Structures are given as structure tokens and as C-alpha cells.
Length: 110
Image 1 (spheres, helix red, strand yellow):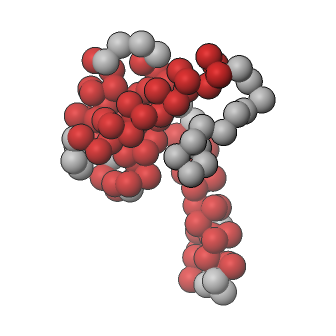
Image 2 (cartoon, rainbow, N blue to C red):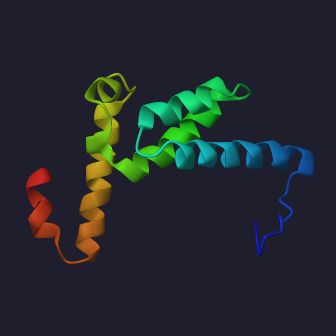
Image 3 (tube, rainbow, N blue to C red):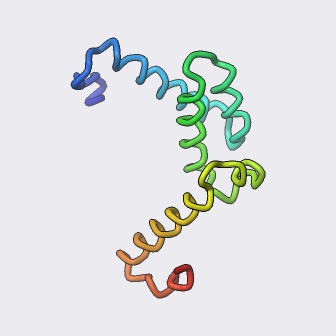
């Protein structure tokens, strides 16, 4: 979107609109259900349609907002490749802090 107008992508509009609808409904689930990741998840599941994509988007937005420490441990440990995701997250944090000159503060992680 640009200035409230949909910018033509490389694909036909009939392929763009379903994606936009998924994004907007995922955003609705995020905004509608406060700080409850579980309620946001159920909102996206019970809607119907492309549930896996909608849940992934709604929970990604929610997870970024609430932070990893506010996601249930039992959900995290069941996540495929969770240890790899943690490793990548810590490396990203380390690299981000290095740009600020704070590498030594996080060097114990690696």
C-alpha cells in the first residue's frame, strides 16, 4: 500500500487481495484481544479460511509484541527447531548490540 492506495504488484490483483485480507484479519486478531496470545490464536483459528497462514501471521505479530518471555514454555518447547531459533535470535541480538558497541556485554553467549 502507498498513500492509502494498493500498489500493483507483479501478480494479478485477484492474487494480491486474499493475501491482504489475511494480513488485515491477522492484524484484527492482534488488536482485538489485548495481551492474550492464546485468544489471538483462537481468533485466527476459528475464523476459517487459510487458518495456518492466518495463525502464523497473528501469532508472529503477537509474539513480537509480547516478547519471548511471555509465551508459554510448553508452546515453545514443542516448536520445531526451537533450539535453532533461539540460537539465531541470540546471534541477531548480539550482532545488533555490536553495532551499538556493546559486544562485550553479550560475549558470554558465544
